[in-house]
Amino acid sequence: MDGLSGYFKNLSWVSLADAAILILFLISVTVFFFRKKNYRVGLFFVLFSLIFVGIDVCVSLFELKALYFTREIFRFLAIIFIASSAVVYQSDLKLLFAKFGGQAEENVYAKLHNSRNEDDLRYASGEIVKACQDLAKNNIGALIVVCPTIISSNMLDTGIRLNGVLSAPLLESIFNPHSPLHDGAVIIKNNMVLAAGCFLPLSQNPSISKDLGTRHRAAIGITEESDVLTIVVSEETGIISLVQNGEIKRYMTGEKLMDALDDAFGITDISRRKTRNFGVGGRR
Image 1 (cartoon, one colour):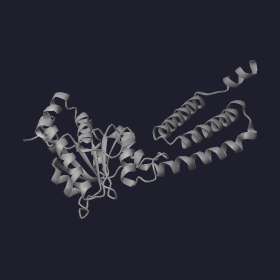
Image 2 (cartoon, rainbow, N blue to C red; image 1 turned 180 degrees about the vertical axis):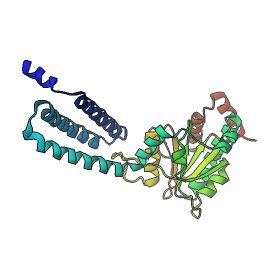
Image 3 (cartoon, one colour; image 1 turned 90 degrees about the vertical axis):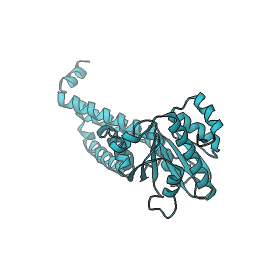
Image 4 (cartoon, rainbow, N blue to C red; image 1 turned 30 degrees about the vertical axis):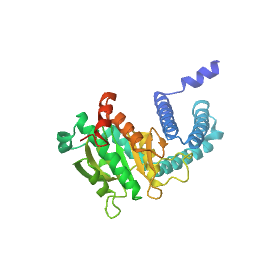
C-alpha cells in the first residue's frame, strides 16, 4: 500500500490534466461513433482506448519502461485512426463545428418573410406533398429537408441561398434534371425555401439496405445529427420516403406525408381537420 501511495506522489498536475483530457476525448469520440450507429467501429475504439490507457498508466504511473515502445506504437496508431476518421467523417465534423460556432440560421430577408401562421404552414405542407407526388409520377429524384427548429448557416452555405416562398412549382423546377441544383438537398423552414443544392452528411450505419442510394443515405445522415425531417423521392422507383431520427419509412402516401409535415410544423389537430375540408393545399 505504501508503495502504491508512493507512485501517486510522483504524479504531477500536468500528468493528471493530460490524463483527464485524454479520457474526455476518448469518451467524446466513442459517443460520436455510437450516435452514428456505427457500433463495430465504436466497440473497436473502446477496446483500443482501454488498451492504450492501460499501457499509458503503466508507463507513467509505475514506470514500466519495457512498455514504453509499445505505448509509442499505440500513440502512432491512434493518430492514424483519428486522421482517417476525420477524412471519412469530415461532413459530420463540419456540422459539429457549425453547431458550436454558428448560430445564424437564415438572413434578414428570410426572417422578415418566414411565416408561422397556420394557414401559411398548411398551405406549405400541401405544396410539398403536391410537389413530391408530381415528382414521383415522373420518376424525378428529390431530397427535401424540413427544419422545425433552427438550421446552421454553415449547412445553407453548402448550397445556393434562395429565400423564396415555398410552392410546388418552385420545388419541381429545382429538382428538374436540367437544373444545376437538382442533385443537392432543398432546405425548408416554415413556408420558406432557404437554400437548394445543399450537401448533407451520409449515414455510416451499416444496417442500411444496399438498395438505398446516396439520396437516402444523406436523408438518414442529417436526421441522425439534427432535429429535422427529410423527404426522399426515388429517381429509379418513384417511391416517396420519410426519414426522422435516423429511421426511414418508405411508400408514403399523400395523407401520411401530410400528417408528418403537419406534426413537424406544429399544426394542431383542429386545424388539420379543417385542412381536410379545403383539400391538400389548404386553400379553396
